[in-house]
Length: 315
Image (cartoon, rainbow, N blue to C red; front, side):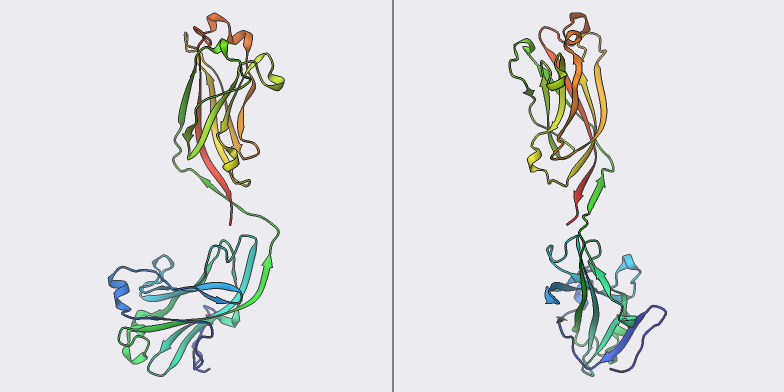
């Protein structure tokens, strides 16, 4: 190794090496066609090093989001969905190579002072936004691009692995939530003989729901009408998933429009899949003819569901 060209301020070391990359090389033919065909990001095939799978990522005209304009941006990325879970992290030292085809040696770039980089669930890519300027790369006398062909490479050395017992989750709030209203008309209410009656399943906020009515109350709600909104099939929900919704449950007054309602914000989970009232309304009040809640043995209940966010386990 010789010709240290490192920029101490950026803590990036650049030098020329006669030794080829130990772990992977990728040869790109007709390199100029990447830009002509609007390929702004090229990912190599996967390769294994240190017990993990990796790939090279090339931005032929620079990574614009990282101010890599007028340069080639080159990165190392951990590959595969199972390579690195949220509770595991790996520290590596790596080098990225570019072959000088005129002199059969390699421009080698690495973090200064061999600084280890941490790959984890939320950071799966490290590299150099300005690996080499396009002017230097395209200069034929430098040997990096010959007959429109170039060769990149990588070395990856694992320094340390950590397994963290902690867990993680990602909360995604809905930018423009839509309130969904579901109305359920229940005929022949006095003839309902089951403890619980359920509405048909309906959709709201990418989830499936149903309404539950207990005509004679449930549990400590005896003597009341019990009324709930529930996830239609909570068994399909991941144990760590939480759905945050604003819910209004309403019993319609069919004569005077003086409806009886309650509103709540609630986190729905597989283990807590419903919200509502055991004592939503006294049956004596519900059955009073002048109240309009039970008219000609028909009652109408409704739910307004506004899903505001979903939290999922990170993987």
